[in-house]
Length: 329
View 1 (cartoon, rainbow, N blue to C red):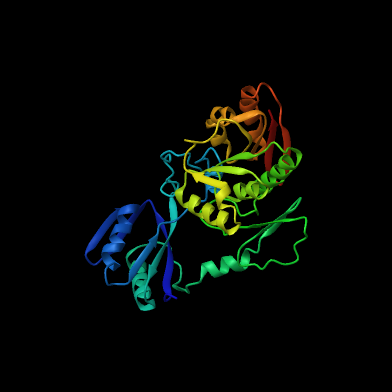
View 2 (cartoon, rainbow, N blue to C red):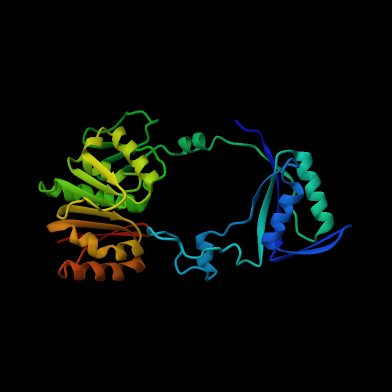
């Protein structure tokens, strides 16, 4: 395990005045960080600067974002430098040794009027081990037992389906309401129809829904733009012994045009953007499960998909603040 680091916070305004024996200097915020690297970088102990952060929820509350989450839909992200928009941001300086951190803090205090926090020791942690302790899996009605590979198989009722999942780069551990809504809708759809032999999982993430469909007997095409998530999904397919039943790819190229069941657990902007493509791949009489939605999203999504599916209206399902729609074409 790596050694400790020593940190202190400082409140940094847009413009910083530095008053030393060499004279008075003024810096814009980004230039001030560069100055700190010049003064304490190299062999003088400074190993990192965290230049502050703003949560997407806070950016939404402050009027910096139109949504309280942030996604990229296979395109360059829009301008999101929320931190730079703040009048004052909380930065954190990281040093390899306590004496170096104390010395830098004392000099900054002498040369500026910035508000400084105390020097504290950051003891390294095994975050992977901590995560493994916290994630023990989840039961999802009607009969899904979602468990990580480090939890033993025991006390699982015979009628339940064990789904092994190693959390990684892809979204979907079974604990989020949108994933649970999809697992429930998937189980119901496949139980009610013997015609569902193939499934498209659009935005497959960790592969949890693809694996679930494969465990119920379907051949599955999982589509996810993130290659790291696809690697995680392939690992999860192997954990469950269904790797030969699922194909994961980054695009829809080569996928079928008549799936009897399509899953899309992604957010509203992506569902709207790909609505025509998704509907074009749904077989007549097929089932379309959409999730990743909140209440205010429903009218727009229902309107878009209903028009494309001949006016059919969906079933609505809810869990917590999240919603899922099930269309029967």
